[in-house]
Length: 256
Image 1 (cartoon, rainbow, N blue to C red):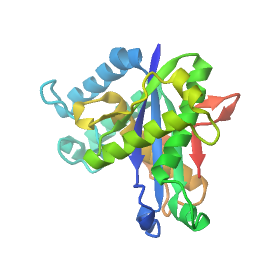
Image 2 (image 1 turned 90 degrees about the horizontal axis):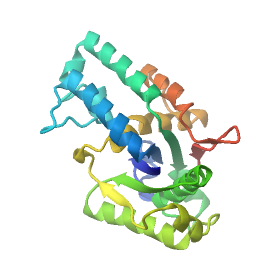
Image 3 (image 1 turned 90 degrees about the vertical axis):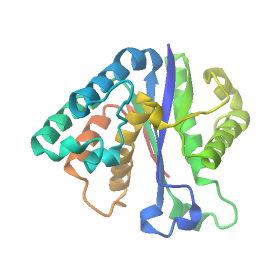
């Protein structure tokens, strides 16, 4: 059994933008899946959901994007019909509940980070990724198995930044975890970076839950400037059963 953690990013790592309320927070959400489960269950069921509602075809697959789904933009125009929207939402929530996956979300307040560390500070993305990898390592050690990590491609320079950050952690470890522990459980020292357009189910699943998970963390810390939306609340309720837990404690949520 091999696991893969699919990573989605909400926000950006630019500290200069941290004073802007719209860009104050950066979050990374990792969705951990058994690769056999992906091929046998997750991918076929996700593709059937797409074909049932959006006429997706193997030669031209529909790719789930949270924003486009929310706003019923192409290719999701059928969701402008309230009856179809209601049925789709019900089916999507049912799958999000039944699919077997584990979630780890890390959210950083960049403004607080910048204000606290005036002279030396972590790169925000590297900081969040370090915490994500530590918890993924705990998960793999607990399962006595191995895994790797895949992130969504964001373009040439951004992809290189992600890969360099991952390799640095694999090579040097973190403040709390030596690199040898990464070497034991990770099957590759390279971060896999793929575009969501490749129709990668794990990345699409991460995209669907990353924003609700981030909002939950902000709401818990009284930093969300608006009420949680009703559909987002339903996803958050499901996530309570999906966050990584150990010894009765939730380790799948971290606010920095």
